[in-house]
Structures are given as structure tokens and as C-alpha cells.
Image (cartoon, rainbow, N blue to C red; front, side, top):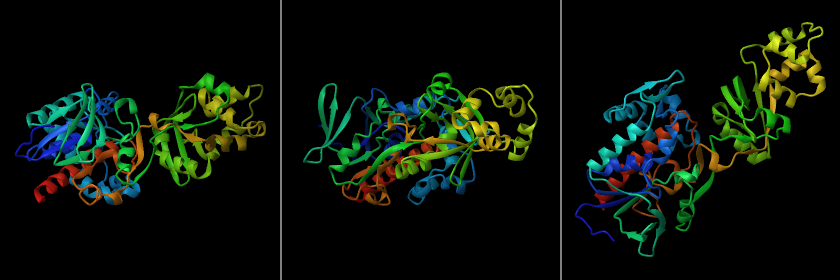
Length: 407
């Protein structure tokens, strides 16, 4: 048990963006201790930055808020307090310049997450924040003391207030395994089922397609489900499909599969050509040319796109130019299940918002605050996830500071 100081003693559990953002808000007014089960902080942030850290998204702010769906009302105050422009300024203050990519995504000029994280941790340590690695939270004992498993045995800490920022349940090898949900459920806190978000889906491919084309990218396509249409790319995997265009529709697809057992995704393999243009091109006499040759010359369909066509079209469709054109413009893929949560980019579900007050404190556990992906919200990739994690971490940190002042 640590010796008590004059300043309030605060425990933050989780050293991802939400936890570190909260620590930043509290460092001036409390003795802040950040705990994490992993050997070093910010593991998931570093992984996200391996191919370019997508910090936030530059677009009309009203449109930005709409990306958070049904959780918008609860997240909006925090997002307004720390909008994308403020995130870019915060990064600049840490020595990381940013730029807006052609898609509107905001990246560090150096692309990587490591320089930003190093500077952030240095500033936190200089502000007196203590980091405790390899501390796996095991809940509370009967006296409301925090319990951790460590390489040196069990440790106990008594905190004046606690902030939980343990992430969701995707990428468990990086520490976000969702184990906290059972610990909170034991305290009567309602936690919505953790589900995959921004994820791929299973498709019952033939052995031929799976063996020949697993890993092949499908470029210049348009995906539609219900009223939603997304232009982009996806990848054929051994189990099904994945990639940015699929992730953008994943919430609706997942919900439909849960309700109906399957979902049909429509793929336009030639979004730059109208149905009429395509029908005319395919109706030209092909002479002795094979169907494969005709498709390649008339429509540019070959490789994985040709394989997807043959996977989904019957002989009558392949023989009829009008039906063939329609198939290429609305190729149906039957999705049978989302990929497992451990493979997902992010997590849907979590601590229900009605369990929290406006300051992100659990009503059932006064002095315990929750931030980040532990909360029941989801958003598409493209900087929205990190934006909300940073914003809710800061908002929960402010709420905790207010709690300490009002005790």
C-alpha cells in the first residue's frame, strides 16, 4: 500500500490514448499513477501507427459528429471540447506536425506513432505521472482497494479516485482482452455484449477461389448494403472479405447477420461504367474469343474480379450479356458471420451510457470513471476511433478532477 500524500492519489488503469489523455488532465492537481498489464505503454497505439498513425479526420464538424451514430449525443460534449483541430494542435505542441491526406484523414508528417508517444510520455513523466507496467487489474477487495497481479506477486493500492481506460476486446495480445467486463458486472454495472466492429466477414468460398485468390485485393469497387454505398477497396481472404470498404459497412452488416443469420452485400465491380455502357460492350459479337477473353477486352474484368463473377453467376447469367452486365454491377456476396472479435480493428458494446453520469462517473461506483473504447459506442476507422478515445479520456479526467474538488 503506497504511503498517502497530501495531494489526492489517483489510479488510471490502462495506458492507451484514453488513459494517458486523462493523466494529462489530472497531473497538475493529483498524484497520478497509471497501471497497465503490458510491459510498455501505448501498445495498440504503436501498432495502429505502423502503417501510418491516423490521428483524426478533417471534415465538416457536423458530419464528423454523425459518424458516431446513436452514441453521438453522449459523446458530443467531449468531442466539442477536443475537436480535430485541437488534436492537431496538441500533436504540434508535442513536436509532431500533421497533414491532411487526400481522403481527409490526418496523419503525423513522420507517419509513425512512436515519436508522438515518446514525447507524450516524456511530458507526462515530467509532470509527475508514474507508470506501473505489468500490473494486471483484478478488481477490488471488500474494502474497495484495487488489486493487481504483478510479476512480483499481488499488489494492492488504495485510490481516492479511479479511472478505467482498458480498451475494448479486439487485439487481446496487446492487452485489450475485455476481461474488465466481468469485473464490472460483478459490481452490478451493465455492460453491453462486446462485439467486433470495423471487421471482416466470412463468405463460403469455393475451394478454387480460396486457394487461388486468398489475399488478392479488389480495387476500384463499390459496395452497397441497404441504403449505404461505399466506394473503395477490399481484400479476398481465405475466410471471406476484409478491408476499408468492408469496415465502413461492418456495423450494419454485423447487425443484419445477428438478426437474420446472413447478409447479402452487393459489389459493383465497375463503378465507373453505367449498366447501359456495360451491357452494350458485352453485347458486341465475340466470335471465337473465350468468355474470359471477351470479359477482359470488353469490360476489363480479369483476375480476382473474374473469379468473383464465376463464383456467383450461373451458366445462364454468363451466357446473357444483359444479365452478365447486371451481375457485374451488383454482384451478390453472402456473408455468414463477422470475423472473431480478436481480429477486429475495434469493439462495439461496452459500459452502457446510462450507467454513467455526465462526467463519465459510474453511478453505482462513486469515484470510478470510465473512458475510451470501454464505453458502448463505435465509429468507422479514419481517425474517429482515436479522436473519441482522446476526447473521452480528457473529459473523464476533468470529471474526476471535479469529483476530487467536490469531496
